[in-house]
Image (tube, rainbow, N blue to C red; front, side, top):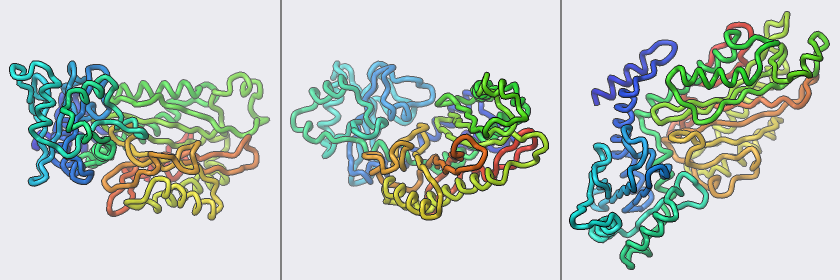
Length: 442
């Protein structure tokens, strides 16, 4: 506990740009968070789903997405074939954590393979199953959630062959359990998460500033690679390649039309810039989209019509988050939000997703850009408390002088619990401006 608090204090008290912990201290925090999750999240998830045995199997370099979140920080991969067994005692509620492996898996999972008694690994697993006599044996198979479909064909086939016949009919999908394990955020994780989102916001503020962009010279690709390098230089990772896009007004007679035609990716005065970026740190991920406007000579603010379009997208965020209810499916939230937005004259597209251990994480999908009528499978899953989401959407507005309808594409990370939805580090409510000091994120 003291180690965790020391590491967390370093993270929280690092001024304008949160300090990135050393690799060693990161490992300490990851392991402490993982130990807490095994003690709290896992027993609750097994009780909620009615699964009394969960077997997670992976071979080295072909890791199940779930097992990657269960390995200690010192394990970058599974070792040979790694088999984890979690058995919940219905009487006590305690979860036994075993590894059919040659050695312990960190400090939380004890090795349980007597190689002299059971030379074959599958035989050792079969003995554990027989001695515990579980009613349900959950394996990571899933039609709709890739995160919960991590057992490969070979392991699945060999595992079933190793089980005594009476236990094969007890094998079920671990999908609901795997999703709950992955999506549930602990109180300690939510103490750390604001620093990740704040760091992402600050990277965007710097990237969309005169320190990086010189209108007429800098290209969108220049800014993309600046973001990639900045993330690496600060000590973070990224889970996807950033993107920077331009929405442009019709050709301005005051600008060199040959220049506009020669390289449409050169950033020019009057452009509306958009970035999609995310970082990875302490096994958690962010996913943020924001906008900046490049001021024309003589301008001190963005055009009023553009600000109204931005406000419309903020309103769409409010409508969506107001429709979050525990037990409501992602598809139901989507339908209700779209109906309300359209009734208010907004032209919405909603494609919100869970976030956490993965950027596009396990849990209910709330639309996809090409599935505004609902998402079969993942959209049928229901919202639960103690989960995080990337509130991702856009609102389209027709504006005179612009080539196409302007889409304000926003994405901000938020947390959902009994008190409702709150943005983890606020959200963008004004356009960032170039070249002048950017307005603060509130």
